[in-house]
Length: 388
Image (cartoon, rainbow, N blue to C red; front, side, top):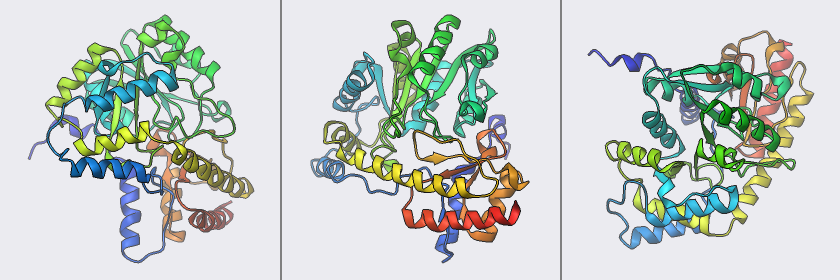
């Protein structure tokens, strides 16, 4: 069968492939320390599960509005107003099948063939692939660990061409965990406004912050920045709702209407009764989010303590999300070689940084229990000592 040319342009998701391999090994009875997956190990909070169950029992099982249940769209808009300083109404919101789907809808609605999208590296694996699917051109800008893997205003400005249409901003970041300071966000907003770009701000990790880090949504910087901003987020990370597949996109009404049209011809509405769980997530108590955040903070520190004691290992200290991205260059291996050898010799699963557009690092997720972290970090230490 002759497949469409666009398929050949895509790279499979290495993160999903490695996680699948780890799960297959576990199913075979092999003891694996899996640090690959970006999924909280906590159950979805009870009040969210109860709300969805009640909706299911109440018959909320039929087709719903393509853009999402009106009450959920309103709740998301209220959240963005109160917590992020973004003056959105329900008409500015579309509920999507996960945060990933919100970004896919955006790329399909905004990009024409040849439009350029600036993406700082290391980047989340799906950003450039989505751009390619929309016939756009991903423009990758390598960032410097000396600057905590953050793109500077000067780098952003230098990457802009007459074909540039969109800039992808992810803070807190996957895979590095770094958080842009409010001043850094304001400086990037200045460039975006002056150069008349659009920016999509992926804020799905916004509630997972440590060491007093502060999240500022770029659209809240000024009315001019607000007009150029699209926000992508969801419920997977902060509320441990990964399998629920509920995300959202917030932005100008014309863009959201275009996304609704696209979604109407692809997936239609998100699972109806699951949306009632998302309403409960936003309107219910938030102690569950704080409890998970504190657990992640403890795990982060434990993992950092191990890493800093390993020979040849250096790591930028992250202030958000649940990832670390230490340098493994002292081992003399590429990130792919490192990951394969670590899995083969010690059954420890990490993601090679080549998947994120930068070699010489590994991404380690601490969204797992402390016992696994202690066991896996000791094995990683043994591996580093055998190579350095």
